Length: 70
Image (cartoon, rainbow, N blue to C red):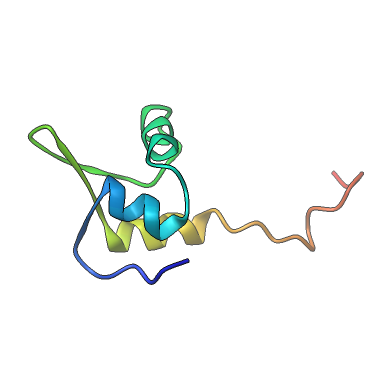
């Protein structure tokens, strides 16, 4: 993943940094599953700090998720 710089990111910049399609980012936003966003008029921006926090909250510890384990 590309390093996310400080400041506001456009949808295209964030999608590129995460290595996903911009449409996926839009679907996540609509489903309220993606990182928090800022709406500036009709434009959507993402604060780099919010994205970093969201990524940290969504880390999956593989050692705790094994098949058949509760």
